[in-house]
Length: 406
Ligand SMILES: Nc1nc2c(c(=O)[nH]1)N[C@H]1C(S)=C(S)[C@@H](COP(=O)(O)OP(=O)(O)OC[C@H]3O[C@@H](n4cnc5c(N)ncnc54)[C@H](O)[C@@H]3O)O[C@H]1N2
Ligand code: MOO
Image (cartoon, rainbow, N blue to C red; front, side, top):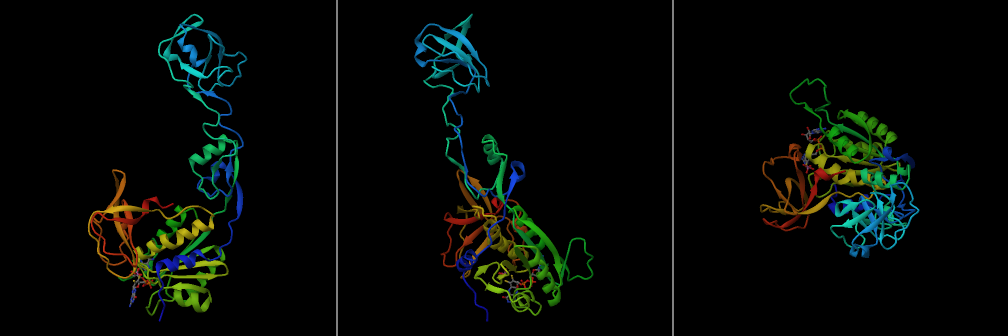
């Protein structure tokens, strides 16, 4: 008899396994997009380094706005350093991006003055420091701008470029090998020879999830329910990857060989086999030669939910990233009784309305764990913990935002 453990316990066990540290390599900024930065990025200068004009106009002393006219003594284009100084009664024509000339504290925009020869008359006053970007406005020297573990995106690229950093250390993405087992399942394009055969979706759904999470993938396709084929597949998978994910063959049927191969043939260390969750109760996690094997149930919804819950966090960890599953609070629009003493993940629709997430189950199909179409459109998973109460309409509940998965 198998011993089922709680969802929390299964997460704790997986969280505590020793994983190898990611290999670090340097990448040019654009090639680093989607990768995880492996060290803090600290500003080595202030931005801007000097007070800088934010508009086109005239650099003045603020108190000079009380004067009738102010004399223009020089021009200060962006990219040059003007020698003249602003003293009482004089101004310097200054442009967006130009350094503020010495002695000035305020920029009066061209729209706020009338120009007569070499003099300006102020038609509309501005407050002290107007359109003057202070030293360090964008970032200050020694500020930690990007934390180790951040996934590089457009904003990181821009900030790194402004720091004149062309190459950054990033973690080499882990590799996940994926295979689906089952004698009834067919790969894309494979000829159907009898009515009992179905098309496999799991191997590709999981590859898609892993790729979106930043992993490299090795697709091993479909393996029939046969001990030798499954053994060969798992040996190949272990030799090519950091994480092996299989689907099918982990419950109690006569042909559920994946578990036997993992336990008896490979002699892998089984971390757990059976978790009190729905879907995915037959999930098996094991370790062999420092590689993690996650054997998921065959049902399409079960294997997808479990890949999200168990495989994605492993990928995050192996990349050294700070990412977490996107779990947020949402208001539920109907009663939702607790059906079983398990942690249950139910597909729902999510909307963001008036500053809060709300969920409903409109159009969601009921049936077995085979229904993957419930994950289309704008989906989330309602999370009901093992020891939770019946949910009432209007309650705040935990949901996992499926369209926010990285
Ligand atoms: N007597 C019992 N029967 C079952 C139990 C149980 O506790 N006692 N548990 C059920 C639950 S829950 C699940 S989940 C499944 C898990 O079984 P397996 O992991 O061994 O999966 P299979 O039997 O191979 O497949 C289940 C189902 O999914 C379809 N399938 C399989 N592979 C794919 C694929 N790659 N793409 C799409 N669909 C796939 C397969 O045709 C089956 O219909 O066991 C229950 N039974
Ligand atoms: O493990 Mo099954 O996924 O509960 O339907």
